[in-house]
Image 1 (cartoon, rainbow over the protein chains, first blue to last red):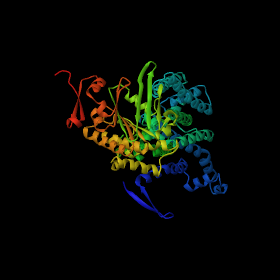
Image 2: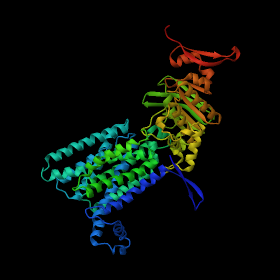
Image 3: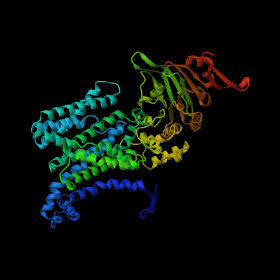
Image 4: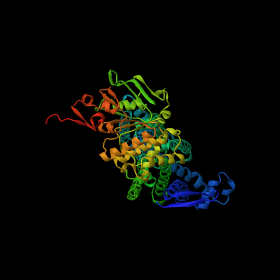
Length: 351
Length: 263
C-alpha cells in the first residue's frame, strides 16, 4: 500500500496517511456530495449555486433572493424530504445489516432476520386494505414491524437453552407467518385498486414522501446510528462469540439485546417510510468490507455512508434518469448486483 | 499465591456434578497442567476459573479476593482465556484480533487508541509475529493462531492466562514453539493454567499437574510425582508406562507411553 507522508505545518509533526485512509474519508464524505447532486437532478434540473442558495436560505433568507420561486419550492418542499429520506433509509438498512451480521456471526443475514420487514409489510398491507391514509400505513408498518420482533423475542424466552439460535429460528418462523398473512391480504384485496397499491408498497419507493414523515425517521435513524457508532468496536468482539466476549470482560447478552432493539427500531422506521427495499442490508456490508476491511471501527461509519450513497444514487436513477419511476426494491438489485460483482473482483478480505 | 480454588463443586443440571470438591493453588510464574480424559471436567474448571461459570459450592479467590466480587472488566484485566483455535466469521487482521485484548481496559463506547496499538504491536513482537500484523487471521496456520491468541492475552495485560488445549491440532514443531514461548513468559512472572491431552508436554513444561478423573482431582503435585504409571493408568483407564532418562539416582520422566491392549 502506498504511504504518503504529510507534514503538519502547525505542529511540525509527521502524519502518515495511507491510501486506505484517503478512501475512508472519501467514502464518509460521499453522501453529502450526493445529497447536493440529488437536489440538482430531476425533470427540471437546478444549478449547484441555486441549490446551495436554497439550502442556506433557511438560515439566511437573503440568499434566496436571486433564486426563482419554482426552484425554491422544488428544492425545499419536494426534493429535500425525499433526498433526506433516501439517505436516512439507506444508512439505516446498511448499518443495521452490519450490526446483525456481527452479532449473529453470520455474513449472510440482514436486519430482517428477526422478521421486522415481514411484519412491517403485513402492517402496511393491512392499512392499505382498510383504505388508510399514508400516515396510517406508516404507523401500521412501524407497529407491526416491532410486533413481529417482539413476538420472536418472547417466543425464544420460552426455551432456556441456546437463546440466540432459538431467537433466530423464532424470527424466521414469525417472518414467514407474516409473509403468509400478507399473501392472504393480497389474495382478498380488490385487484383494481388495493392490490396494485399493496404490491407497489412492497416493492419499495419514495414517491409519496413529504416532510411529515422525515422528523420521526430522522430522529430514530440518527439516535440509533449514533449508538451503533459508539459501540462499533465492541461488535468485533461480539462477532467472536459469547464465550470470548465474557473472558474479555463484557456482558454480551445485554449488549446484543440493546443492539437488536436499536436495529429493529431503525429498520422499522426505514421500512415504514420507504417500503420494502431489500438487498441493501445484506450487500452494502460486504461492499464495505471489500473497501475498508472487516474491522467494525471503520465498517460501521462506512456502511452508514455507503448505504446512504447507494440509495441516493438508486433513487436518482429511478426519479431522474428513467422515463418512468421503477420501484426501488427492484432497482437496488438490478444495479447493485453487477456493482458488487465488480467489487468482488478486487476483494482481498478473504472471508 | 494469586489464583486459588477451594472445594469447587459445579453442576450444569441438579444432581449431576461435573466438578466435585476441586482445589488448586496457582503461584506467580507457574505453569499448571490440567490432565484427564475427555469429559473429566477440565473445560468446566477453566470456565469457573475464568469467571464464566459460578461454582455451586466452594470458593475461588484471586489475589485473596472472591473472584465473583470482581466486576467483569476488572476480572478480565487479571485473568485471560485463550480458547481453542477457531475461525471467526470475519477476516480480521492479526493486529485487530490482538487489539481485542484491550477491551477490559476501555469503556463500552471506547475504541482502541494510539497507546493500545502500541501495546498490541509489542505483544505481537514478544510472540515473534510482528511481521504478521496485517495478515488476515483466517489465513494463518494453527500454530500461528495460537501465538496470536497468546499475544491477545498479553495485550490484555493479565496475570493469569488459561489455555484450552493449546497443543490440539498442532504438529510437534508448533507445539514446542508455543510451549517454549509459554515457558519464557512464565519465567517473566506470568502464570498459566493449561488444559491438555499431551502428558509428555506436561512432563516437559509443567511446574505442577492436576490429574483429574470424573470431576475429581485424582492427584496433584510436581509432574514427576503425578505422572506415574499407576496414576496415569487410573486416570486414563489404560495400561501406561513412563519412560525415564538418566542414571538411577537422578532419573527424570521423559515420556508417557500407553500399552497396546493386545499384541
